Image (cartoon, rainbow, N blue to C red; front, side, top):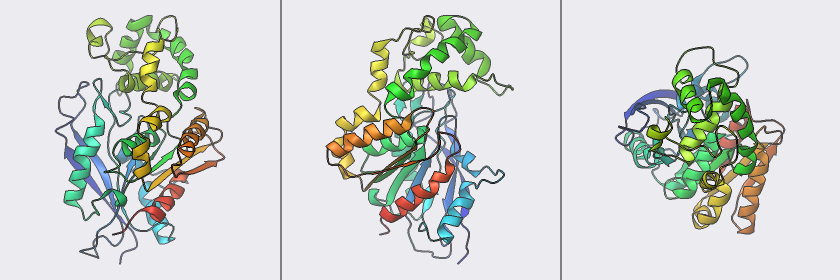
Length: 344
């Protein structure tokens, strides 16, 4: 048996993403990790983990090589060789959008990215590779927006994903988003006032031109979330963009009606609606750093407390770090998945 796994770069043309509102490509490239014994054991089937990316990320970025940091290929090979995880297939989808991300949900402003994963990618992978094609052998995990996606995809689709791991996933929106809105108001004024400023930012900055201003991420993050949580297809005509911000873009006053729409997507609220689905999951693993800049460790505690009150089983852990450069937590993610996922 070879001691290293293989990376296959897949190209998939999505019917669901065709003609999406932003004109993003329907053809997506994404890597698939096949474990060391995949080719030597011709009939063996393997569990599958979908590793989904954070905001402004896509699957192929997991292959990046950097100084003193493993890429996903190296990490998975090491974890398997150290017997910290058993062999499994790992799929790393591309769900990025013009506005930075999809949050892995369906939105009339970005496209149907939940359907893309649930109705197309899973079937495609199961039809092409020797997978164990049932929910108890299929996990979804990620960090940041990928952690959010893991929670939402699994709680809505427990028949597809029977295991879920979220590292620093977006939750309790009053803490992780709301405190950052005032910075958006200040920064967007570099592009004008009100709706015109947002339209100007999109026109001027969402491209490959470099360098980007230091406040670019603070602006695109709020735009990206608004495009997912509060789409407004008619907005192209009236504002120059197809979503609603949860505040007045000129004065900064909170628009409670729009922010309440955001809150409907908050895992803390969704836990109430989907508690019966959460009970079906074989693994709920939630962790976050105690110095998280978006206070997602607090959101994680609140979410887990909701589960506790409903007697839903979960694993909750914290670690001493912030929100950035925490890929090393994937060691723990894959270890926990390996302990709980079914190999039959």
